[in-house]
Length: 64
Length: 139
Image (cartoon, each protein chain N blue to C red):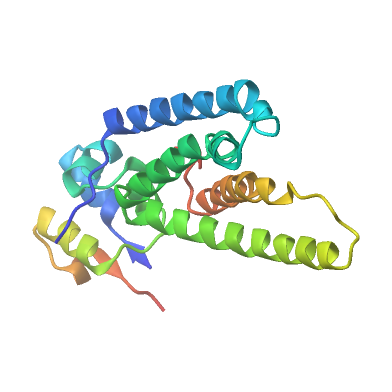
């Protein structure tokens, strides 16, 4: 699954660790999501969407 | 929505507590356990023989605490590693059991190796799984 998490995080000027703290997950988890190696659970996807004030679809793209 | 916060201080405390418990375990194995066979009476033998189990139970409790306080990716890594470790150790135990039943293996202390083997395979499997997700696996 593709996502815009890195782009949105960079726009806020946050490090992966800072974003992880805001989301209640580790820096490693943020990194795994950004690199597309891990797809977050629905609750975490909602937390991400709420944090960036966007819809889940605006951040995550299931792709082909 | 419930959040599992990562608390570095608690992680350090987890490592310190694990090391302390393992030090107690090693001390008991070296200083107390050798006297189990020579102890007088079954209650004393049982008590001395099982004393090293207490710190191991503490380590298991800490492992459970760690998994419960991990975030969702870490919990997935723990689950994958535990699944692999359970499967490998179960298969090895089955092999040992069959060999024991056939009289090929007659060592009575074989079961002592189940927990260390579980920890070893779990650590290896977790490291491999963590690399797959792009983390260092040593957290």
